[in-house]
Image 1: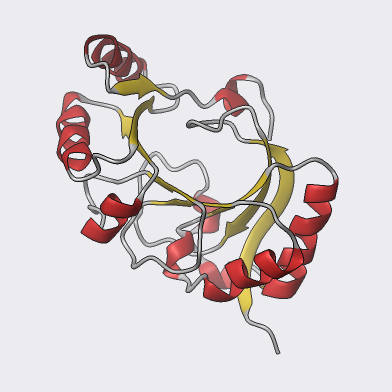
Image 2: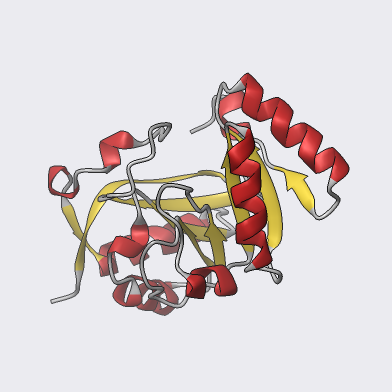
Length: 202
């Protein structure tokens, strides 16, 4: 029998944030997260046992169908997807289709699977592993207050290979102003906005 994982939802939409914002993507949202960010907009994904198990083969089949419908890549998100070993899921996706695989993680767990792109969104209260910092392709730090900018620079110093992004906390006017001002005066950093929320796109 193939591996099963707790799944909150799967859907085909547009990537709303980061360097790939605006591109067609198929999302697999896995359940379970113990990072506990107070501003999290998917807190319903935290309790793993509240969500049904689904086989990695069926998830891969959904990804392949989304690819036929125009998805440019697969996004494995959460929750915190790396709470689970993703070897089986990424292997099944690669067998089913040729879509690139992206993972969105806070970096608190060891890497698993074979992602083509790692989006690391580290958290001050639960810092990421050094291995994930070294491996990530984009570093996306959520900004609510000045200390978040200090944390962002510390994280960036350990991820020189990545693109660096500052993302204002949703509906945080202070975070928005801080991120805009910082990106304006620090050219390695760029602003990331949650465009799917502004446009009310899933």
